Image 1: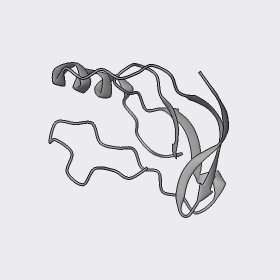
Image 2: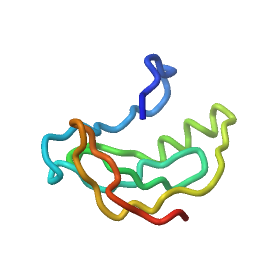
Image 3: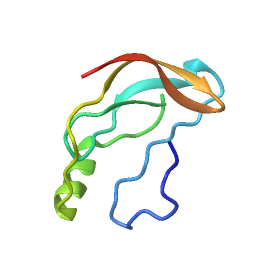
Image 4: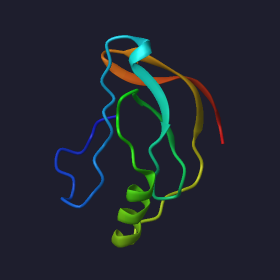
Length: 88
């Protein structure tokens, strides 16, 4: 849940997950080093899964495939979080 305090300068930015209400949140594909990665982020957040995958490739990083298929989001402690899902 916590973001690393100092990401490498060429790493894709972590999407905005801030919110005030559940309506501020949306499920978007943020990408990861394996491929698709649905996550709850601010509805206005810009995401670039291709940039994330390209960064991983340049770094020689791979990750384990599998994720929770997020079906809904909620705002908890001013952060968008998954409200439920099924492991893929």
